[in-house]
Image (tube, rainbow, N blue to C red; front, side, top):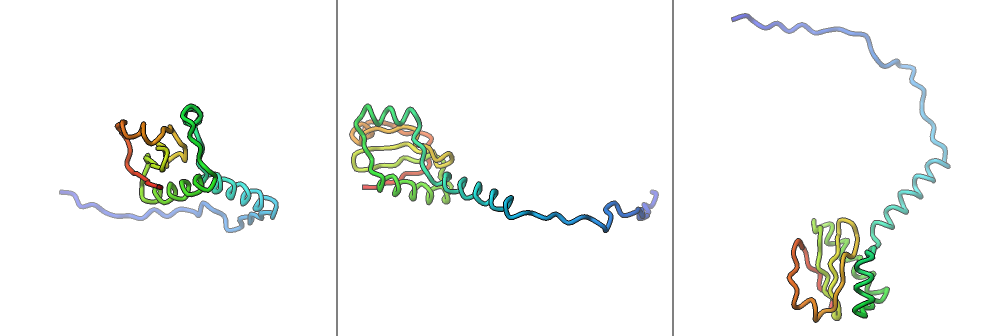
Length: 128
């Protein structure tokens, strides 16, 4: 068999050494920082879908702002653990929440939840 020979190819540098530095102004950095901060803040807030809002109104489900804050915190923890879809059980209600999208998908009272079969759920949060 023929022997393979290695011959390096020598070429000219493609990048010139006189590159112009990029200067960012504080205005651009602040704009990006503000946008990033807003995105991070909105990422932790739960969104109630139109469907879930209708179900909550139909079933008379009211959740206090403190309780929403607890749910948001628990959903954030669940998301860190790899939960995508979660069943959140409260004293008077049950919510199906997408941790991936931070969205409440549907809501029902606790009694009605006792007769349901929940599928595609990979986490449960119980807040009594």
